[in-house]
Image (cartoon, rainbow, N blue to C red; front, side):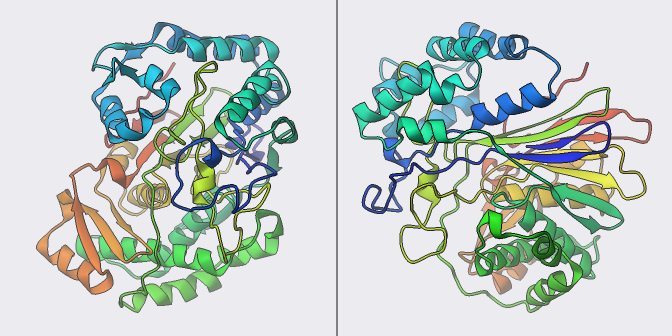
Amino acid sequence: MLIHFPDGKRLVLDGHSYGPAGVSTKSVKSSSQRIGYKATTIPSTVATLGMAGSRFGKLPLAQVMAPAIELAENGYPVTRLFRKQVQWCRAQLLKNPAAEAILFRDGKVIKRRELFRQPQLALTLKRLSSAGADDFYRGEIAREIVADMSRNGGLITADDLAGLAVPIQHEPISTQFRGYEIVSVPPPGGGLQLLQALKVLELIDLDASDPNAWYETIARVMQVVYRDRLSWPFKPDEMTDSMHRWLVGADRAAELAQQVRAERKQEVIEDDEDEGDTTHLCVADESGMVVSLTQSIQSLYGAKVASDKLGFFYNNYLSTIPRHGKFLSLVGNVAPRSNAAPTMVFDSNNKSTPIMALGAAGSRRITSSVMQVIANTLVHGLAIGEAVDAPRIHGTLSGKAYVERRVATEEMVRRLGNSFHVVEVKAARSYSMGGVQAIARDGHGVWTASADPRREGTSSGL
């Protein structure tokens, strides 16, 4: 979570979850084990939002949570994308009775337009609204989580939950891009890769009116910065301010830009990119406070198992952690890397309020999609809605390039083939190319919001 306060102060609340103390390669043996109770890290959303509300909020917790409780109790109509997502995970979800009870009716996916109600979740939210976030880690809800884990072979204990106390507060990291200040989150989030990508893009002399050159460069930049991430496998608490400045500075960007200009196929690195079950929201109030918040349980429906009594799905973040022979491998209390990149953009001549706040869903496509939206506004001059809707491309460590059909000309596919081993043309607005949510402020102080048409989202103003 990235917060800009009315007085100009900025703060990152790092709610990334951690593995249970007892997790090991013996307890979770395979990196392909992506589902089930053993794939779950300690949930941290409740602690993070609870801390943000108590320290920086103005409204009582019960009032803040009332709309969520109402949605869980009274439901909302099932959409086309909702049904598709359940269908994609159907076989795995049906193996868990609690997940089946939430999402299926007599073994069939809940119908479109039917009201989706979550009574057990509503009770959990009511409990939190009265007892507070601490109940999730040390109270009645914590005891039920531990009992659920014990019944089903999970690894989370009462000590694990109680040990996740207060989210870490960080200073955000930032860099300059074409006269603007770009502010994002430090590792283990994906803000560093976003800032590096923008710095590299700025150094490459591109004809922005040539879409073939533009999209090819975007894909190569993303491939190079994620390759660089593997070269600097620091733990988050080992990243000093000077290290941050160097990694997003001009000298390092020049080195990476040289790799982009090399125009050769990179060595393939086996890398399984998940599409990611992430949500993002941006909000600004009349006082000048702006929040950019990314939340995730990793894959669609996380571990594909739910608590029957509490009504929520567990995450599967342990599936992202290397098992053997790699830095940050699977050990107790390990913090998984994340691609979450809640971001804000400031006019370098007036940093009192951001001119843009944005973030995305989509695993590693978070970084590439956010980078492209920023570039579309600051380089191409597009309005925020146009920038979010504009065609996208994505380059991977495994030597694949994905490009949306709207710009996949024969010439572009040919050029991409010079740099990537596989070129895959996606739908015109592909779900797999990230889902950006953004707000932008004009010179009169009026905010405009945009929800990505690739995924379902909404915007509103009061």
